Structures are given as C-alpha cells and as structure tokens.
Image 1 (cartoon, one colour):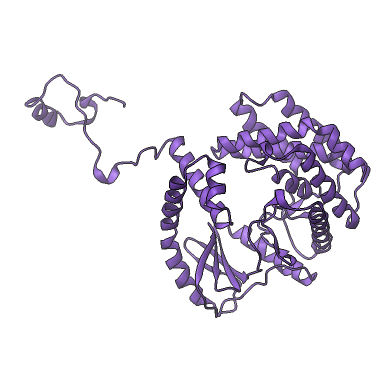
Image 2: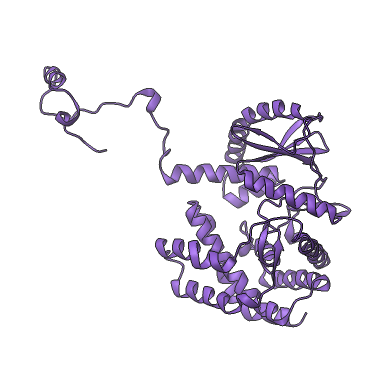
Length: 395
C-alpha cells in the first residue's frame, strides 16, 4: 500500500484535530463501502478466473458434460457446478432483456441461451447479439449472398418494421432461422470418412464464397501482414521463455517466401465443428460468418485441422490419428477445389503461423494457459513437418 504525507492532502486545521487523538504515527483510512473492490478485481488472477469460468460455461452450453469439464479444467464436480450456477445467474438479467426485444419480431417461443451472445427462441429461431455494427453487417452480407448461391445458411428474419436488425444503446440484435443440429460433436470419435466429407463441405463453401466475391463488399485481410505486424510486435515485446524468437522469425520468413503464390479468396475464417452444423443424418448447414474475410484460402482447412488439437487434445490425440484426419480432410477438399503442389508444400508453413498468431492473441488477452497450449500445437506441427508434407504429397 502506498503511504502519503497528510500535509499533501489534508487541510492544516483537520491535521491539527487528528493530532489531538494520534501524533506521529501512520493511520490507515478505509475506502468507502461503495468504492471497495472485490478481491483480485484489478489483478490478472481475478481476470484469469473470470475468463476461465466464462469458457467453462460456454463449453457447457455447447454440450460438454460435467465430467468432461472436470477433466479438462482439473476441477471437482462441486466446483464445476458452482461455476455453472454462478455464470447462469449472470445471464438471467440478459434473458429478461431478450424477452422484451423479441417483441419486435413476429416470433414467439421459450427463450434459451445457447452461447454467451446467442439465444434460441422456440425451436426455429435464434437471436445473436453484436457489439460491432461492422461485424453484424458483414454477417448480413454473407448470409444473403450465400443463400442466393443455394447454400444451407440461416435465413434472416426481419423485424415487424421490415428492418434487418434491432438496435439499442448496448448492441445490435439479429434474428435468423435456427439450423437444427446435435450440438458439439466429439472430433476424436469421428471416422476418416466423416473428415473426407467435411473437406468436401468446406470445398463447396469455398466455391460459393468465390462466386460471391463480386456481389458484396468484405474485409481484405492478410495473414502475412498480421504476422509481420501486431503478432511479431506482441511476441517480441513479451519475450516468452518457451518461444524461441528465431523460430518465430523463421516461420514468418517462410510464409513471406510463398505468400504471393498462394490463392486468395473470400474465406470463412472460423471453421470448426460447431460453425458447421450436423445431426444424425449428416450436414445441416453453415453458420457464424462474423469473421469472414479475404485471405489465403489455405487458412480455413489449416485452421480447422489445428482446432482438432485444441482444448487439451494436443496431449491426448495420437499424432498418427491426427495425420489421418489431415489426409482425409484435404482429400475431400481437393476433390472439389483442387490444390497446387505449391499449396500442399505451404500447409505446414501456414499452420505454424496460425498457431503463432494464436499465441500472440492469447497473450494479449491475458490467457496464458491457452497461449501455452497453442505453443504445444506449434511445436507438434514443427515435429511432424516432414510427415505432414509426405501425407499431402501422396494425395
């Protein structure tokens, strides 16, 4: 605690009154009750706990079982239940607000939270909350254009007034049809045939997105420019003990050497089992185009395959199993899109840079545990580099 001289802050008359009670000693003056902070409210530890609890609740909403959550976060059943109850209470106020907002549409039904920013309305509709108007408009453009291309994407439900979305002082609300799915699939229990089909499903999306490029405006991004910009700056500034800066610079140089030869197009940018929806009968539709952008097309399949190793699976999934999924996914993708030999040779480079990007992102968000997991995935890709390349050359 910082001590200050009373003469610097208090009037002389008041100091003289205090001296009538105490003289020449330190005095602690408690904060007003209204200004007292909760434990850890300004510390990283408090923020880390809050972020962890939010991730646990999100995973639970996506379908993770209590036992899986206990295993993933090394917490007792009692602790997980306490966290879930605590997080649920936080969103009760938001639920009441959603009930009022739904009245702006000709839609009725029970309201159920399905993620931190998404609510199911009945069985057939859902509302998503946006804080960024540009991101919402990007989603509107993607959904409209892809439906015109005949793809299975949610349908935009207009307000009673005819507008596309509702706005208030805290955010923007978009209602769409709800594509039925079984929620979270366990990637480790899916077959190689499923991954081949997934590769084709991603290929069909890329062909449709390519056809949409002239129909809509979108953000043109560059993985290389991100790596040379904020990613490099963030990782050099932090100086992580476990990340060799020589490896960082080498990965960026490798990407720069091949970047101009890699086909660019409109991509999804957030491909994982969750934004592509499934039920017992198979694929049901695409969702979540909030991050859609122009970039190298390899980003999407590489991002998806790296995601199979996240949430602790990098230490539990056998490398040979993951390589089988890499092969099946790219085989399915190539059967529709076609990949040049140069693209196949660049897969490892792109994967390395994506994981370095995630390390930098998690560091900026004070998510040290996830940053270290991203580094483990980066290290595994480096270790399996020749095996990945051999797998892709034999497609």
